[in-house]
Amino acid sequence: MNLKLLDFNQCQNDFDKINKLYHEAFPKEERAPIQYLIQKAQQNEGEFLSVYDEKKWVGLVYVITYQQLSYVFYLAVDSRFRGCGYGSEILQLIKQRYHHTIMLCIEEVKEKYDNYEQRAKRKDFYLKNGFKEMDFYFIEFGVRYEMLYTGKRLPSQYFDELMLHYVGEKYKEYRVFD
Image: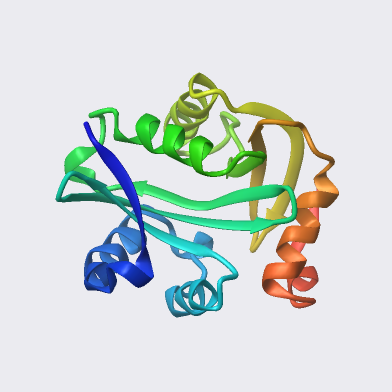
């Protein structure tokens, strides 16, 4: 495996693959409009990254950085390559690229959800890759999320500040901290 992260601006030919995977991997209620993500990346307010293994495109990552925090907004591996170790390798690349605290969120893991096993498996994956529970939850568009982090533990207000910087005041309208 020889992975590299390429900025979307360097590989705009990947748009169809990115768009398809983005819509397959994330439920509608968890997706920001893709054009908004691209616009923010073009304004250097986010990074839309294509993941390559040599010349083979294998996935996408979207990261927002503000002050001493990077937030992995989206990470997805093409379904043809899941279970091959790419997710763990991508997380290692992210840790090498961002030398401060990295946060990401996952759907709350409780047995009451129909996809409990999928949620538990996802959480175990991140914990095995060095992320820790932050004991911080928030609700966005009716979905309850748990925050995980690696690096220095920061108060939840850093996440709030990051999102306010990225989205603006509108962010306050659709999130609730729990």
